Amino acid sequence: MRISTMVTAIATVLALSASPQLRAQDAGEGAETDARTAAEASEPKLVIAISVDQFSADLFSEYRSHFTGGLKRLSEGAVFPSAYQSHAATETCPGHATILTGVHPGRAGIIANRWFDLSAVREDKRIYCAEDESIAGSSSRNYTASVTHLLVPTLGDRMKSANGAARNVAVSGKDRAALMMGGRNLDAIYWWGGEGFTSLAGSALSAAAQRINTGIATEIANGAPAMTPPAFCASRTSSIKVNEEFAVGDYSFARPANEPRFYRISPYIDAATLSMAAAMVDEQGLGRDDVTDMLSIGLSATDYVGHAFGTQGLEMCLQMAALDTALGEFFDLLDAKGIDYSVMLTADHGGHDLPERLKLQALPDAARADEALEPKALSERVRAKLDFAWEGPIIYGDGPFGDMYVTRDMDDAQRAAAKTAAIEILRGSDQVAAVVTGEELGKMDMPKGQVQNWTLKERARASYHPDRSGDFVVMLKSGITPIPNPGMGYVATHGSPWDYDRRVPLLFWRAGMTGFEQPNAVMTVDIAPTLAAMADVSYEEGAFDGRCLDLDSGAGNSCD
Image (cartoon, rainbow, N blue to C red; front, side, top):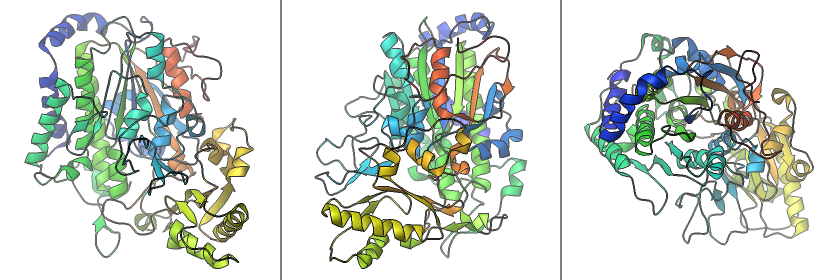
């Protein structure tokens, strides 16, 4: 199947969701709105914020010359190829929390995808960033999705507070992306729920959402043949053996019938998400009155593909081509409706390829993390060093890096001894770049200045929250993949403090704007104040950790 055919199949579902009344209205408004330029208009009628999960600056650079669709269009606007998710915990939830709040994860309270609350009465001490753990029976894997842990408002929340007629809509392939970009005050929110899109507990699916899900169900039931790769993917096609059980690098996303998991870990999920977003434009009437509306879109396929297959094989090449095509068709649909819209596109974090391929591509030091760094193994090593007997877990963590917590069941002296022993062991590892304690981070101010030059401590400080962060933070050396034992669907990842995970593209586009490229470093916390100025949304002093970026390449200033 060709990529364009895939996108058109989903778009056919979308066409059925628009009401005849809205389509007729669009046709009458198109000629007038198409003639407007950004210079002639005031604030846009619709602000669209797109996050492409795991879309690193490296991927953007690698494939930029091949883009012919939506990403090419955005590349003709204001381009910041070196935007930074400034913090150390470069995961999905913290990254999305920065984009439309304008504050670092530590201030937003979203320090990781999962953190630990050792005082929790439930057996599972992990807290998922988008769960409401107050609901009986909740766990970090089986939860009711909620934005309760986000401590600050999003731009959409601010727009709704300023004018209740403004609409705030979020759509994503992941609940945490939709919630962290959308916020609390939403008119509609949808994310992928396994076999179709779902919403908040107790919320009924709208008519348009049901029609989109019906079309997706048909797509899943029918399956699909392998995609036909563009010519530029040929050089990226090579089978890489991960272990004795499987290889990656040459898969073309053939989908067996009735297999939703093959649909999710593929370019199809982005096309479906954009179809749902466009359906919400129609159903919610976004961009059709004098109030500026907000539409947040989280595109998750790049992350799913990156984890399952790495960033440098045929799979990612197909994903980049499909993403470009799907975005192009989405923008074409908006153009046909005559909506005056602006677009921002960035990523929640970057990503790194699997070490088995990196070793073949001039990075011989690439390696998988030592199993001895895993919290369970680390606990045993700490136990052997203590001068007192202790049964049960000692160190809690979500993997061989990031926030780690010492059991609260020990007394203060015992906890101090266990913590000292753990840090001593970790600092002796040739895979560990740094270990920073919570006490050290708590004494630091939030870092400022040139983000690309921040120290590892400063990067960790941007992720630190005193009530949620660990007793210490472990940062692995560059090139170390924190997956000791890869499996099907999980061969590569992100989460490090290094630029391949921190640096992402940042693109702004609006019809009629004069494009420019600014290669110097900016931050994703700059997005919210920039879009607030664009939408004429006022905010209190100190509301954001970032700054407004002037998108007027001439004498004017879009931040004024």
